[in-house]
Figure 1 (tube, one colour):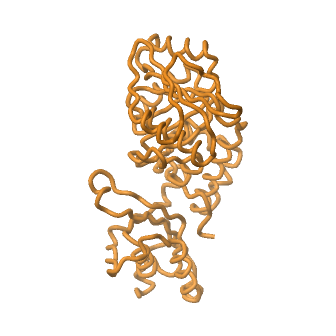
Figure 2: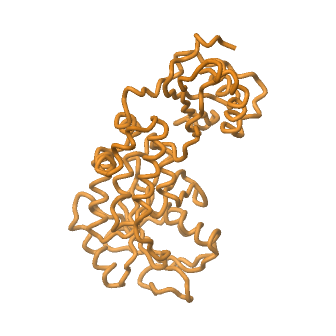
Figure 3: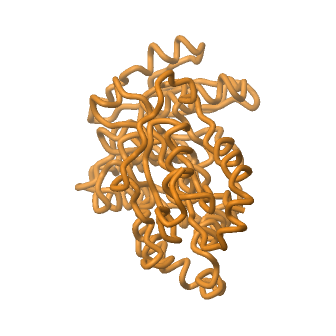
Length: 360
């Protein structure tokens, strides 16, 4: 084991490893016995590497400044806690992990302060200003950095969850621009309704002067045992407590006047629940434009797709603060029967900031 003088200075460090064993080795031999785990999350490779490589672990650890005598006395227990915290399916590696060089240990620089770290996590200025306007902002800045991040996570989540909960979806149209994965999002929601909630109902597809490609919807609906009808048809629930979901043509972001037939249909059929589907991989300007177009059509719920292609989810906080639109779920992968995260604020917290004070 390294001598105390060779350990890193007090501070917060972030590093990426292949396995639990490698993380424990780095924390024990490089960061020293005073290091404590703050957060751990799996990081998947992108592109072709995702097909052939295994997920990696991103670890954030805190090195505290304490007396050497106290540190040595707590070393064994702290490493046991680290091992438990980092437990993942990767533990079965047969080969000894290669110890990471010092260059792979990236300081989570405390010199940035809480504001700097929040910006680095991808949180927008709008969300940051909202946090800073809170009456407990000054108190947060007096806490140790890892505690301040955890408290900020709880604050963000509580602000989103404070909204008045809406009744479960029952009769809703799925709206979205071309290419956002609108029909795939509808399939994901259908699988949740049928498999998890054991609900029954039917789906209606609608076309106006533009074609509405159905993609996997006909085959998927048949596999689920969910009737699929083409409008004109009944848009009311066929059974008490049943659902009716409508797959509409793509809305236009550039030409709002082109959305008049969609708006007229929704009003005529009295479809009050309107789910706006947005591609989270779009740049912020495109996201804002698509969001505005959905709001013009009276969107009541929100779905983000393609989260598996987005490295930072912090930009999504802006859309969670709008109390007029409820976040429904996040599509975190291409599967039609999975990759569906309904705890939207919780998922975004886990991908941006530590949700719990794991160092306590």
